[in-house]
Length: 154
Image (cartoon, rainbow, N blue to C red; front, side, top):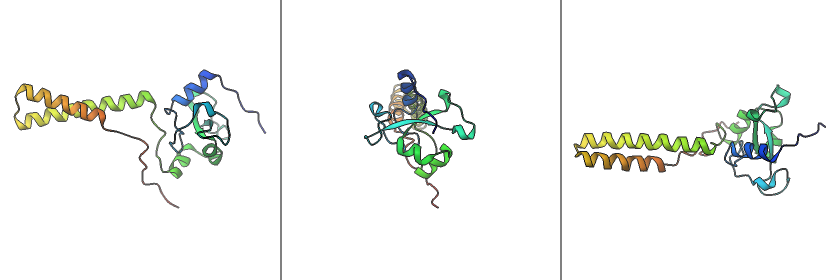
């Protein structure tokens, strides 16, 4: 059996943060302190998204956090197939991606609010208020990648 690579604390934090502390396969929360602690709640390990057996690399770009059981059941298969089996189409968003999605939703909400104000013929003050309300509502809409898609059942 091949020896496992040891990761620095910074590398582990970077890998863990890529999915905001969630397993990239099943999307459930991981416990950072339980790295490599098989049998513990939220225990996880580093997974090669593209396995080394399939010419994957050990660069940070190819490494994702996964529950030990999820990673072991994936074996050398693809991450896409493992996520599809769990009912997901992509890995969870990172904190940066979540913030970007919230900002996009706020902008869209503001635009919809402005359009509604124009259609209703509101005064400029009313239009600004409607746009602000639309932006706030848009920013608080949960765009959660954890919502399961229709997974193919075999």
